[in-house]
Length: 257
Ligand code: NI
Image 1 (cartoon, helix red, strand yellow):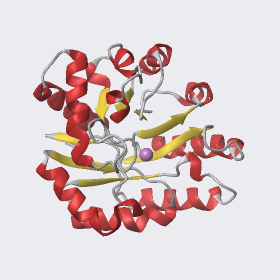
Image 2: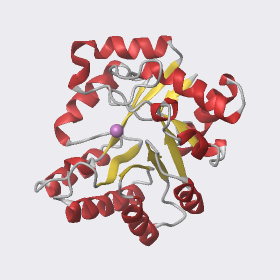
Image 3: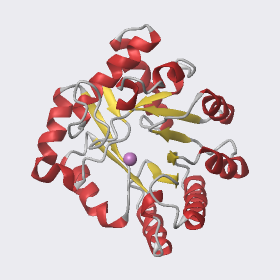
């Protein structure tokens, strides 16, 4: 069994095939899928999948940094209201993205700090999105880190120095996706620096489809290719990587308690 710790199967990219995509994942052994939030207009779509596949779909509530705009206060109020329902296992995805648009950089920082506070208040892990913003994110985390704050750096593409910085927090994991299968990504050498007990697998579907599906619309069934590659990098078996990453994900999101 595998867990896809980050997949946006509720997006319009999947059109009317959303349920088929989930069934294909389950058939491929991807028994559990975590759907991170982006913005309030997608919440109903997330919830539709969670109610149709309650044994296989778990939800996170949050505001994606690229969706932090002038209305971010209203968006955060909705995130808080959702968390109050007790139906969510994480806060995010949240963080800072300076790749797409820097217009709302100040607001992105505020929204990230507010979601850190929500994670602490609701005792939930953070799903962090960091794009061209590691130093800005570390600066904020350094201020708020404590024994209870935990989470995952999703779609991790940092280098060895970022690995060591994140390991110092002790309570944060690394989300590894299809980028690790891309020739010349260099991520394989970085992954070797990460202890296997800190690795979560993710697809980030519909984006970043792994080789041999690169360039296509990604889906959670393709997680098997990522697990295979990570097993190769560590020189271990697919079964061993499936077992350890499932256990890591269950621990971080407290799925057994
Ligand atoms: Ni995402």
